[in-house]
Image 1 (spheres, one colour):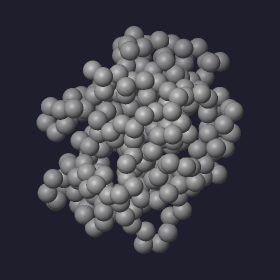
Image 2: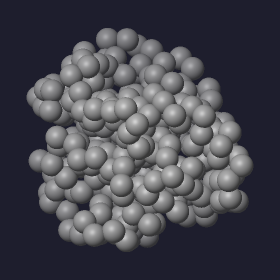
Image 3: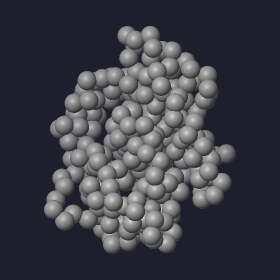
Image 4: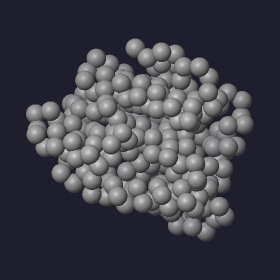
Length: 271
């Protein structure tokens, strides 16, 4: 069991990887739930046009619903689109398919790389929005939506699937992080890399994990997220796996990951 945390300034973590199917949204949902379970106030901002983080938290899409798309193009405040989830202390700013067209629209707007950062700052001034963690679920590409997330974030958390080509593409993401740090957001750091979909029956998973740790060292979390059928089933019920089956291996792994994230955040603040 994790210890309760004292009040601290909001930390913004972008959960990003330009590859799809690596467990990015699953990590956003379940890490957010685990953090909320130990007393943290958490906001998940969904800026992936697929909107899977929103539906995975049980947020029902309605016709003409305002979403993060409207926030980014300046038609709504972030505060006005936030929805309360079924999980205590966990809110969600949902995404809709409208985000598919946001790339072209953002390119024509002022501060096109800072739109999310500006919206978060306005939201934080609103009563009752004292979140300790904001998790931004990014799309599986390095586009303006992801750049907005990295510009707004204090740190990036990278889910990495235990597969043969795991390290391919990671170098591109790390180069993007460095460019953002140099030109847009000098405070951005890599909070950590989490290995996902680990199959202990497959020797390849062990080899990939060893290779990733050799390349990235301490940036890789000790916690490994296993391939687990309960984790896969949970989104179809509109629930994080911690609510769907809190005793399964996937749930226990995300609880351990939340503990590691909190410890690393303490270390970053103390540095």
